[in-house]
Amino acid sequence: MVKTQIQVPDEQYRRLRAFADEREWSLAETFRRAAELLLEVYPREIEKQSAVWSPPSSSTVMWMGLSSDAIKSAIAQDAEPLIEFHAGD
Image (cartoon, rainbow, N blue to C red; front, side):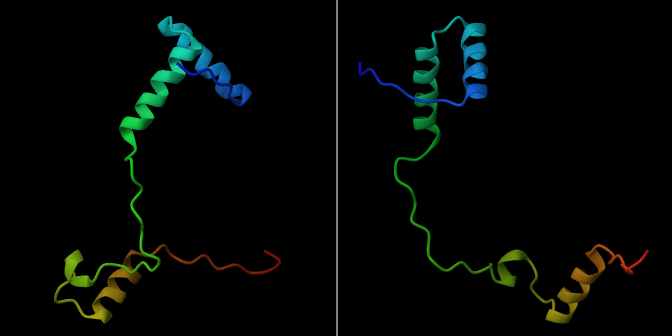
């Protein structure tokens, strides 16, 4: 095993210490288990994302057959009402 030293914010340390104590684990065991979980959950290789993102086309989100005016109308109907602001009120 490799011995290492890390810094943890005070509040996180208190929560981890309480977590470990509840399970009768050492703090080192808690960090080892957390690291193992991290390695299981996150993929080994990070997928490279394209530099340019574009929204899906309307045919892939079930808007087929709707005109752009019909879509705008649906958006307007679903929008929150505007609140008028008058200076001095």
